[in-house]
Image (cartoon, rainbow, N blue to C red; front, side, top):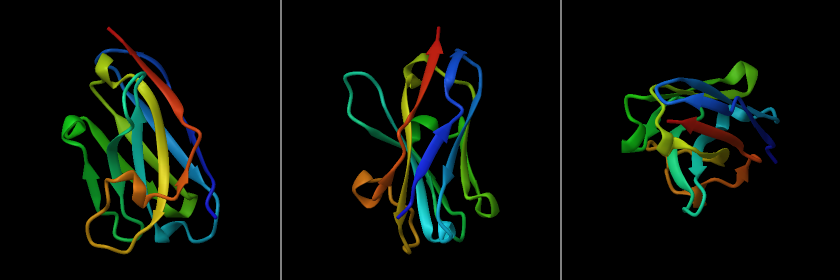
Length: 126
């Protein structure tokens, strides 16, 4: 069982930056891939970025490549999502999720992630 708690959301102007954190419980944190997803009002949840548990392999949605950076600190059981050059269309609730994954390509489909946090609101004003 893994429990996840997101933090770092808030209100920011377009072009600004935020860093989200995802703190996890459990002693086998480095065995889990961690993904970030977001859901805007009236839209389906979508993949944002993910990072593997041991090698730190990353994957990004095309819409955030070059703007967002995902990283992890296994000693702190924490994954970060650095978000730069934010746009109003990035306004959403951001969720982190954990999945036991040993493949070489980090999954982007939410069905691969068994554990989810409660989400943190990110609002980007124009």
